[in-house]
Image (cartoon, rainbow, N blue to C red; front, side, top):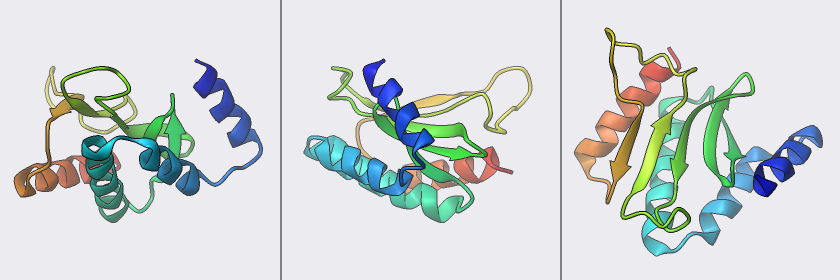
Length: 124
């Protein structure tokens, strides 16, 4: 919660979200950092309209100030996997049930293609 309060203050000062996200990624241990770096590149290429920002101390990507997707480090949350997720503002509705987050142990080319497609759909 302290990190979120700092993020809100930084947003009020119009801090550069890109540099904040890159700084958070740089702090991550190697496996999470490699995934976060790749996801950062992937999200920016798939949905240039999204703005990088930190959200609860983790990399996130927003449109009109609202987070659309985010990455959670396995290390920070002491989990056996990292998470890439979407908020309720993402346009992923499909029937009455659809996934909103994915566990990541590594990123394959197929995973990257699926994430890129989901990010594009989320902002459509």
